[in-house]
Length: 464
Figure 1 (tube, one colour):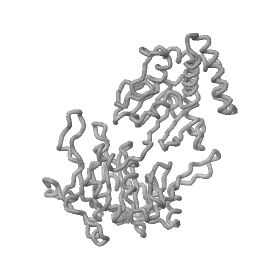
Figure 2 (cartoon, one colour):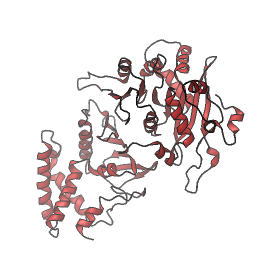
Figure 3 (cartoon, rainbow, N blue to C red):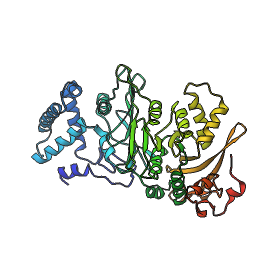
């Protein structure tokens, strides 16, 4: 195998989720790549020669690229003389892209099997594949190299990160979420977390194939969306709430006006009439911030048929509930919670964060009146993300909001041979109280969407 073949191989994907990885998939490591030492020495020599010029903000990208190519050409002339001109050019371009691009994490971002990239230090890079974490052999050359990559990412979206503002949320051009934090808050050095977004939005078929939901559950949620039920998607970090919100939002009819409100734009709706709003952080002087709460208020003046809030985190929960209770039925949102019951408790807390001294019973009545369905997602021990519960908000009994479990994940099905859960989300047999309202709108819930195969939960009357 020639040098050019080795270079070409270093950009291939194996796509099988192999846990032993360097760069992308099953790439060459220090032990079996003859170029590994050469590439490492060349990169180190480049840092030694150029020094702070690599991080000079006054240098344009084209000028910096010219410096890098010139220095690399000299370094490689000193290192080896058996490379052909074409092979040397490929090696220069490869190292240059590593230095000037996003460094050693760039191949992971190109690998569709990697869902998250976590840089804990310049020499500690983890990735997530199929819900499991793996330590890679990829390394940044220096802490300064890692810092440069972080600054490049945040600068591209008009954000900044420095000692006075040492943490930032941003996004890559493809929509992937980025969180970076640097000293003095990060004690052990700069840290970077990137949650990747698929280049193509997932569909209902994809979620069925992944085991996230069943065909019955899809049809039920489709009926709820078309029937203008207010739906809240809850779950822990990384359970797929935004992905599910995107899929559920696709059920909204194309003749309706939709306003989406997000911290960072992630939703990809294909309807014709979509208005996308994005919150704005404060500028360098600490001014100009536009939080989600103000966008929710503004959206009410935009004649929306549906309001889709990417995630409620604070006082905007009150404005969202007010919208749902004043003629904007069929709205959708997500929040972090461990159970559907916890989701209601978190909503109460976030309403109180709006700064109004409202009695708890009044808040709960607002929630019970506004919310119709809670869809809860969990990341299970096998690494898969599943809908584990779909609940209807029934109303108030005394001072308590009551819930009915309409769909529940079948944990009793056990595990497959590969260690994944064999169960799927199934109906419990309880008919939702809003089924009559759907009927009046011309939307029927077929019996097969409600009836449980053995009805053990329905017999017990799963309500909380």
